[in-house]
Length: 80
DNA sequence: CCCCCTTTGAAGCAG
DNA sequence: CTGCTTCAAAGGGGG
Image 1 (cartoon, rainbow, N blue to C red):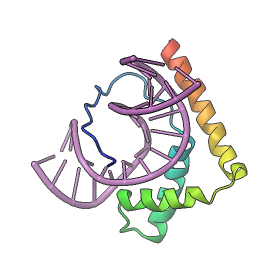
Image 2: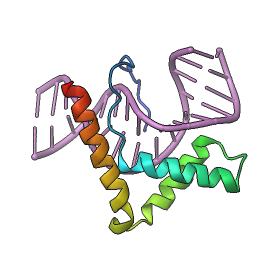
Image 3: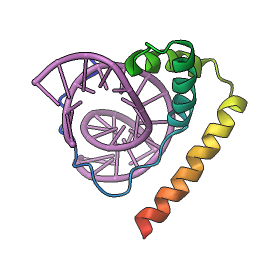
């Protein structure tokens, strides 16, 4: 289950838009590091995922807006 | 210096 | 539209 043979596309060009979770992850990741400096990213992702589940739409709202802004940013990069 | 591990969301291709 | 696949962040750990 889960992991399948990823063929993996070549990493190049304008990076795809980050989702709301990516912004949330960055903030929580830093916050978790403050409390647990020995916490690895893989563990942080599990913790963050659990915290994301308890967020209300209102709390996700600012992250959703940032994701929308990145979508516009990406749309411009692609068009350029 | 690149890949893996991990999370969710979304891009984007395939049908 | 539906469904599957790949990348985005990111940092230790592995190679």
